[in-house]
Length: 192
Picture 1 (tube, rainbow, N blue to C red):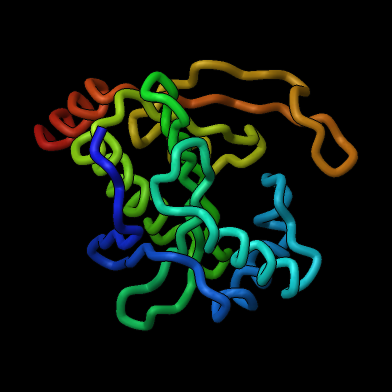
Picture 2 (cartoon, rainbow, N blue to C red; picture 1 turned 135 degrees about the vertical axis):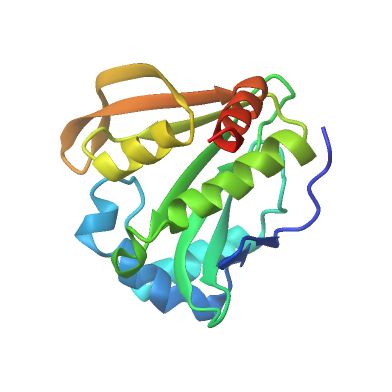
């Protein structure tokens, strides 16, 4: 596997890089929004919580084995924080890479999530040399379910009431993709 040394990832419209303390307010604004946090385990109670989260992230090296690395998703022209992408790098060569993505409601339904995920899937398989990717999705999050299906992920499991989140048991859907499936997906997209 290729060592990942830089957190900077560019797409046509977006830049992914490390979160910094200037992002604390923006991070709190959208992660504090019920449209975002209702499907996720982390919900900051204050801007200070967001600052603490960013400080903890600064201790994690991009590509660190077994660690979740949270990247800022920024608009290229303005550098405005519009979301974040979590990548859990495997602790061993036999584990998958795991992804999670959050976008500010003001920036949803514009194709940004697909753009980010396409770039990161391509990096994970073609440059970093990983074999398998996974994503865990709350099935009530229809947009995320549709995103991973459109990207060519397979639904491998639907765990019923498997996750206790803010006072209720919720389901968890596991999506997965192998490197060869991504290649086939890209080939079929280019045939269209």
